[in-house]
Image 1 (tube, rainbow over the protein chains, first blue to last red):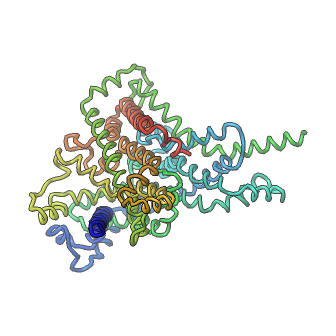
Image 2 (tube, one colour):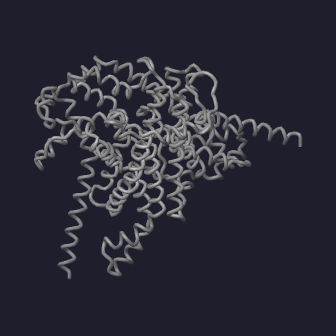
Image 3 (cartoon, each protein chain N blue to C red):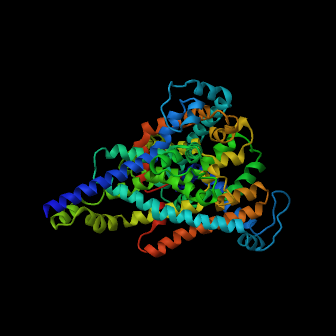
Length: 280
Length: 297
């Protein structure tokens, strides 16, 4: 009896680790492969798809930064992501403050409406977004992307920040009112500083979205002056068609911000996800 | 009295001021587009000029359109594979990690990593992996001696190939399920162990029922994603070869690109309907739990 149990235990454990390791491998090997390939020569890439580079080819990275309009695209992406994060945090902080800390009729309905936005497939809005942006004269500008990204992230941000602000104890606010804090005082001196952690979580999701977004950028911009790196990877691959090594180096450059951000903020991201299963 | 009214007027002014930016953005990018899509789907509008009402013509045309029907079929396959393969896999991983094996925290972090990497970058990698001379064929040849395939170029394997690569994203669902699995009281498992129930039985009779609500939520998210899928397929195959991998989203984009705006809107309405249908059906089947409110709480 004891023996049978331990046999079963060994079997289950082996199965468990095989499953975990193979799924982990599928999840990260593509990235590892990309990273290693970005240091190999084109000849090496053509002869065998796998393999360690004979010598690390830093020239691939130099080539990538020199050939495509990568620096310009990177700058555009940084501007768009930074502006989106700032704008989204600002409007979300203000809106969530009212939704979380003030009492009035229709508040819950408004909150439900705003957060129900996560259920709407934004890709079905390609036509109206395009017509809205074109009509307002914003087509092919960075501001168009900033505006769309800020808006698209509102449901998730409002959800995260409102939940966070609701968890702040009432007593803190009441004390400040007794101390003579006005509406604005309560917002700036009490709620805003205490909500920093929630705002950072929302901002992280917002940054990841804006940095990685592809469809709207393709739809709403048409020239190098206002395109982002994601479009760069997609459309400048034709420039690299014989130079895969440099293309892989370019792709690595574009994912560095996401990976660095993830290393520092993964606790915030995981915490934000477990707050209720929201996806931007 | 006078003072009080003024005070409340001031408060209302401030409240409105604070809510206005969020509401304006939400109005222009959610409410207006929603009605715009529905209204234009009943017109023959090509982007310029006045909209002319043409009844349900776009709808009948779309439903008899072979490409769109293929897209619809593909989206259903997408939704089913996301809901019934992706989520169960994520659930199994969550069940393993909740028992905190060696390195579980690191594994949790690594499993989520692909979710923060851009689809464009990963699509580039998968194109290389699926290439005739790529790593996948090399591995398969070494292991089984199989002849190289053009995974994305062959209509028989393309849909499978674009769906398979989503396995790298299970971390998202896994983290949601893991968080709620961690909240299951340990005493339940202890009692079960005393009663002589093995690990598998414990998972089946304790963990799964306790995770029910979150399983429904993640399945809803996964299947709704399957219905609105666009990006990685568009980047890897553009919907081809011979429309084998096309989806409603890609069909919408191509119609718009051809300036058939109102037909694109009709496809958009279908997208919204199919997403809503998924949510409604799952709610009907699993009754008690309420993914909608769980998601938008």
